[in-house]
Length: 344
Image 1: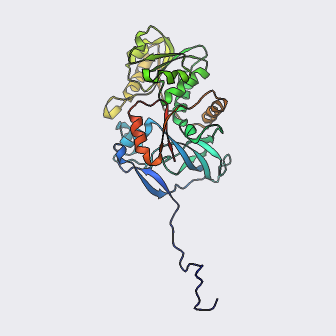
Image 2: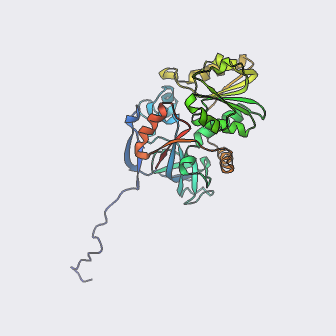
Image 3: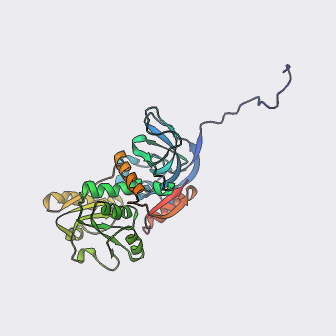
């Protein structure tokens, strides 16, 4: 090309496009779902032990609501941000495909379908530790896989590790039609227990479809007054008093509380857990509480149960990423039958 000629096919200036961006739900203050908004932000950077996931679906659990509102206040004191959230993009439970892996990651490769826990899940891309992910069962949709992690791990660890459920025991699941409860009913059956679920009438049929041997409608009957005694009670979000819960236990039964609402802005539903832990050394019952941990060996165990058809996620509704505030509003109403997922 002679001096002075211009090749129109080649741009003279190459524009700077900046870092890779993605759409994500973000919040910069605590409050109702109205504080959430959809924005374009930079994709997360991965470390040597991380996996970058192209998110296909996200599971919604009460933890999103608590971190969004900053309630109870104890959450803020625990390190999530006193005045504003430390994490702008909420959500942890994901299912998607591997986009890239860190230098130390060998068990996953680009294109693998995975599910588990990631930081900032309500986005097109999320980053998580490889040890908190596992391969997605082929027969599950991304939405089904996305709702497993927090709820199923809570149910599994609550029943097996803290409740020490044994074959032949009688187990009561309070909140059996909720996110944790639907998994707990199925997992208690896997462990060989007889299962009674506590839920409202409108959810009874759904409860039986999840494998409960019996259903108590809490709107009509009080489980503590039924005369039945249980070896293990898993309370997944009720508000029954400790005395009522203990009344329904066998002489040396175990109560595991993994949720609860009410209790004021400072403690929320955790006041029962704390009182139970303080009372436990002085009574014959074992009163326990815990926070579920995302462990790869437990994720693998759940994957095997899912593949064998012994556990099936119960999906209530699905929403688009742009409708995430509506999904969280629906969850907060407390009438979900199973889990809520967001498609990305």
